[in-house]
Picture 1 (cartoon, helix red, strand yellow):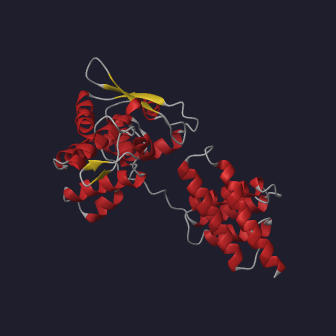
Picture 2: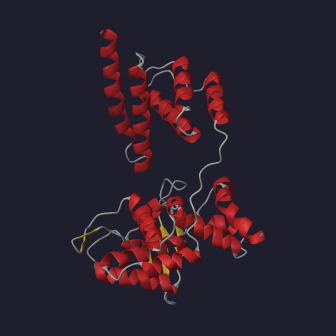
Picture 3: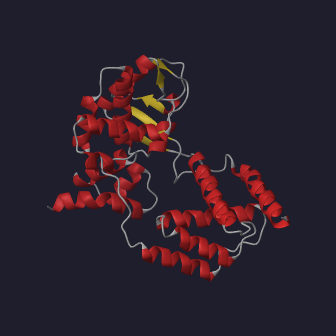
Length: 305
C-alpha cells in the first residue's frame, strides 16, 4: 500500500514538473512528452513497477516490449521522454547505461523497414487540387494555403503558424514571407521566403474576404464567418486528402498524402528542375541532409527513368 501511494504521488509530481518546460518547447513536442511519459507510467503501474525513479532493467524491458508494436522512432522518442522526466524530478537517470543502448539496437534491428514517406504533392497534383477547390470562403482559404505551403516548402506547423504581419507585398507583385518557427529553428529566428505573383494573388483574395481584424494568416471558418484563432496542423492534412478524393484518386494514393506532402513535393520538383541539394536545403530550411535525402529519392528515380 505504501508502495502504491509513493508511485501515485510521483506520478502527479512529474506532470507538475513538466509545466516548467512550457514555452521552452514547441506545443507538439510538449504533447509528445506528456503522452510518452504517460505510456511509460501506465506500463509500469500495470506491472507493479515504480516509474520514478526507474532502473536500467525496467527501462530495457519497456523499450523491448514497446518495440513489438511501435516503430523504432517512437520507442527512441519515449526513451528521451523518460530521460527528461528523471532529470526534471532530479532523480538518477538510468537511460545512459549501455544495456539501454543494446535494447534500442535490438528494437531497430528487429524492424528493418524503411521510414514511411509521405507522397509528394508535386506541381501536377497542386494545380489539380487548387483548380478543384470550390468557389466558397473555404475554397479561397484552401487555394491560398496549398499554393503558399508548396512555394515556401513549409512544414504543416509552419504554415498554420503564419500571421498576417509575416507577409509583405513586394513591388513586383510577389510576397516576402517570414517563416518564423520550425523544428530546426526553436528560437524563432525564422527564414525569409518568396512567392510567385500567382500565389500572392490567391493570398490577397483570401485576405480580402477574411478581413483585417484577424492576426492569423489562415483561420477557421464557422457558419461562413472567419474565426480569430489559428488552425490545427491536422487541417492541412485534411485539406490535402479532401482535394485528392475530389480529384477521384484511388484510396491507396489518397492515403499516401499527408500534411508534409507540400514540402516533399516542392523539394522533389526543385530537384527535377536541376537545383542542387544545398539550394533545396536553404529554400526549405533543412539543417540535416538525411531527411531531405529521403524526400528526394523518388524525384531522383523520375529524373533517371
